[in-house]
Length: 226
Figure 1 (tube, one colour):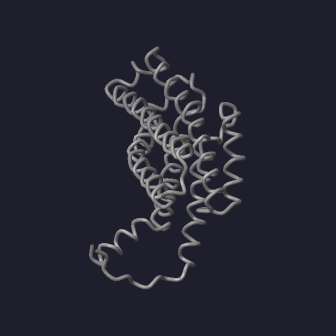
Figure 2 (cartoon, rainbow, N blue to C red):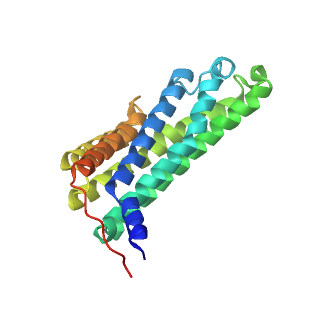
Figure 3 (spheres, helix red, strand yellow):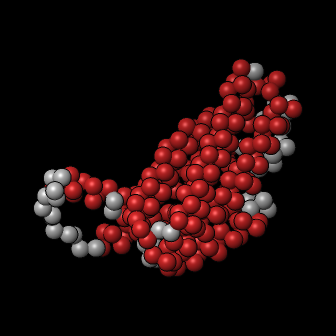
């Protein structure tokens, strides 16, 4: 393996890569939730008037979901690669599983909302306040506000536990992550701001990792590796 290939592989494994991916994910997910929150009423039993007046911002938010998912997968992959043998099997399973389940539920809710907008585009009046709309709205609401949020809490706890044992992130971010995760695990259904806890926490962790990496003295180049 040449020195250039070694350097490229090392750059892909640096904390900076995970930090940048985490920040991109956080910004995109906050923007997605903000657009949806501004356009769609919080009450899952609302009649659906937003389909006629505010569907464009929601469609924009749904188009950002795949990019947020890619960034989150990159964040998970780089963090796991960074930890290497330090990551135990138990924490590895919970960390990876909860992250993938969160993404699956996020994509499922986005697909349901997107399908509702697509059908309503043909005839919004016939879609509003129908049993089909209320069912789709209720399923998407429960996926995000109950199940996805719970998986986000599990992801935060497992990531914080790994951070406490390995020190890949500041200790205070790990303690904060556990506290916030317990709050949303127990009360996400009743706390309206619970959906932004994960992206805000990931943003804090990623920013700390990025700052620490930028302050680290640059390493000298390595020779070729056979």
